[in-house]
Amino acid sequence: DVKVTQSSRYLVKRTGEKVFLECVQDMDHENMFWYRQDPGLGLRLIYFSYDVKMKEKGDIPEGYSVSREKKERFSLILESASTNQTSMYLCASSGQGLSNQPQHFGDGTRLSIL
Amino acid sequence: ILNVEQSPQSLHVQEGDSTNFTCSFPSSNFYALHWYRWETAKSPEALFVMTLNGDEKKKGRISATLNTKEGYSYLYIKGSQPEDSATYLCAFEETSGSRLTFGEGTQLTVNP
Image (cartoon, rainbow over all chains, first blue to last red; front, side, top):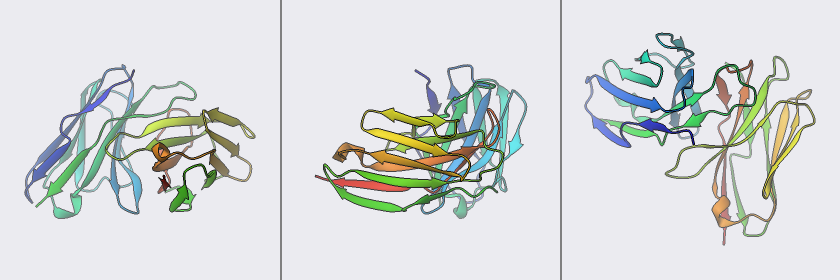
């Protein structure tokens, strides 16, 4: 079974802090994604990556950056956390160039910015 | 940003009822349509990935149909059980292996 592991289930940080959310997958997937989920808004894509050291902006990249130094790890960085970044963050991975492949999700990190 | 819409937003049914909900998506540049189930305190779980117009997929009591020409997919649950309570998400994939655009989901509650 594909395993996507997010480093924390719950995290509380203060406004202005630099926050790192870590995601690791064990299936040698090329594609990795970061989403946030807010009530009434569904899953919105923040950033994604098709390969090591590659990154692409999603729909809501402002205030975030990412790092993909190794294939299995994709980190989401909140450069200077703000209260409007309080949300549920989900990481996902999928294989490249394969048909009918779903995305596999981690359990999510519920982040509160005080 | 692509427009993927799901209806209804929420649904309450009694155990044993059959139910269905809709996902509408762009009919151009279609590659695949995904369905996921997201139970509270768990991670979203893939149900189906559909690529062919007219396709129908089934997994136990859950099935889905796809119409790529008119841009909609239906998800059906036959004989709903309380354990079916979850948010059901659809997602549009524009090209192979690319990013997904998700709908807002349909929150299903099945009362015993």
